[in-house]
Structures are given as C-alpha cells and as structure tokens.
Image (cartoon, rainbow, N blue to C red; front, top):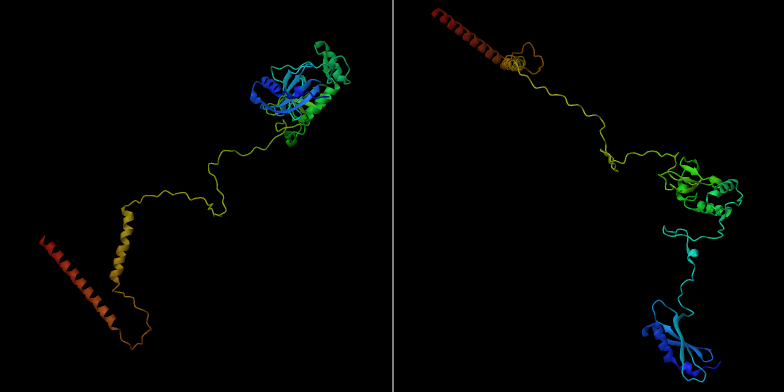
Length: 336
C-alpha cells in the first residue's frame, strides 16, 4: 500500500485536532507514529500527558479526497495503547454482588432458574421436606430449597464460625447438642444444626452445629475463685526468713492502789526497833573468830577484859540513873 505524502506530512493539522479534543495543549505530548490505514487514510498518534492515563495516546485520523492536495480530519479521540492502564472488565451489578454487600435500602434481582431452589410441588427426595413443601405450597411459596441448596448451605454453616472448628467449640468441654438452650432445626437439618437461645452466649440467635460449643453451656460449671477485694491485713512474703512469736499476749492485770493504815504501818517500824536492839547489843556479844582451844594455863586476852569492864560500868551508870529518877518521883509525891 502506497504511502500518502500529503497525509503523512500534515502533522500540524493532526496536532491541532488532538489539542482540540484534549482541551489543553499541555495534555498532548510528542508525535509517536503515523500508520496508513487505507488509500488516502492515515492515523497519527500523540502521547498523552493527562494524569491517570498512563500508556494512553491521542489518535487523529486524516483523509484526502482523490486528486486533492489538502488533508481533512476524520476523527480525534483518546485510545489505550498496548501498555495502557485499563479498568477491569465490566461486570453487571447482579453478578458483582457478594454475601455481606446487601444493605437495608438495597434489593437483590430475581434469579430465574436458581440452581439452589426447586418448585414447591417438585419432589426433593426427603420425606419431611416434601411434606413441608406440599403444605406450604398454598401459603405463597412457589419455590423451596432443593437438595443442592441444602447441601451447599449445610457445608457453609459447618465450615463457618459456628461450626466445630471454631475456637470456642474447641475450648468447650460439652457440645451444643447437650445444652438446654439448643433448639434443633426441623426437617433434614435437625440432625446437624439448631439455633442458640442463650443470651449469655456469643452465638445467641444464630444457627450452630450440634458439635459446636461455648463457655455458656447450661450443664457446665467452674470453681468459684476467691474474692478480688484486697485483704485488710495482707501478709508480705520475701526471701528473708523472719521468726514470728505465735504465743498469745498476756492480759493486763488491774493494779490495786496501796492502802496505808495502822496495821500495815506497824510491821514497817518493827524492823527498825529490832535493828536498834541488835545494834545496841552488839558490844555485849561481839562475834569472835574461831580459834583453836587454848590450854588451861592460858590467861584471858586483854581485849575481853576491857569489854567486860565497859559493860559493868554501863550497867552501874544505868542503875544510878534509875535510882535518881526514883528519888525524884518520891520527892514530888511528898511535896503534893
């Protein structure tokens, strides 16, 4: 295919068309390439400097009529190149929605031919389910959960946070099937699942498996611990041994006040008199140290003789004094 020199050389016309499409001259970069599409039809590519459009280019297509020497603009727009940053493929909202995305103001679309459901009058193979479906057919439920739907939901519940693999179930000593707060489901689900009705349990109001469990089981108990209040008289223990005296302290006895009277005063003076008597009598009977018995020819010591003389003189003086007092008393009587 022959190259068109007129269209290949019309770079200024192609750039003006790209700037007009971009709305700003700064958003159009350098000329990248020119490609001949058909006879008298060429496409020019310019780099795009717009933020967020990495790898995109401005595409401007020029054409020329036969035997004409002037180029005209056919179209100008932004297109992605081979390494362009593209948005993910468009997915309809009905196909994008996932469990947990539904909000109170949202409504899911009707799924025609849902594989999880069957017509209410169709046989599912379960006697209990068929009876329930036939009975509910006249109550406005045109479709009921089919075998595939029951299997899918049972597997999902069993693998979830309320199945036997949950942390609370592994730590529990008894399963939910033996708990008084466990309400079994009806139909074929009765042997595998039920609802928890214990307000103290983290699974209250949720569907749990029969082998699930938690610490709020109705038949379990735990030993009650001591009070958490501080001890009013704490005992501190350290590494230094200290001897403790465990003997009871003696009770204090009342102290009686001393009573002074004549009877108690007499014994106090008695020792003084006795002492005086002893003191006075000491000269009369001095205590002599033990000596060896003297012979018959030995004479008395001089000290003994002097002591005897002193005693005799004292006795004589006492007799004279008594005689003088007696004479004085007689004279007084005669005078009266």
